[in-house]
Amino acid sequence: MEYELLFSSYPVITSNEIVLKEIEVEDLNDFYEIHNSELIYKYIPGKARKNIKSVENMIGHYKRDFNKKKMIFLGIYITIPEKKLIGIAEIFDINKKINMITIGYRLNENYWGKGIATKVVKMITGYMFEKIRVNRIQAFVMAENVRSKEVLKRNEFVYEGTIRQGEIWKEKGLIDLELYSILKQDYEKL
Image (tube, rainbow, N blue to C red; front, side):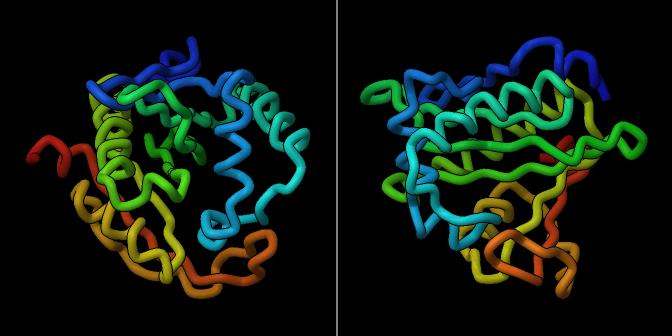
């Protein structure tokens, strides 16, 4: 794993229609719209934020976590018809010994069902396998989150099993999580 490269500067991953990059304070209203959604928080830890100031503070926390080389939060920006922050992608649980990372993603609910999350996962896996040279990428999904599981399957992630009552998520309590992964050798066959 090219660990130092991963944290040398904030990653910017681009395609024709999507840019994954550091979240900017000037996009606070879009950022708040994502974190204010009860529907999005149905499938992730925590609860929807009702205070824009607390959401603004999260941007600083994301930068702090990057500087500590702990995790990376990337804004998901669409470029057409205009540049707009519509989601957040996460790279975390970075394990140098195993050469593995965990990813997560969430989109503004107004952009669900448009294939954007599938493209975002493809962009992240390509970047992480080709540039950072990780060997394994994994993702955990609540069993009820059918759309997210489909995103992973479309990106050739393999269902490894259900971790029964294996996590405690803030505001959710003890939950089951399904584990999906893709290995570099799988990716190279695509």
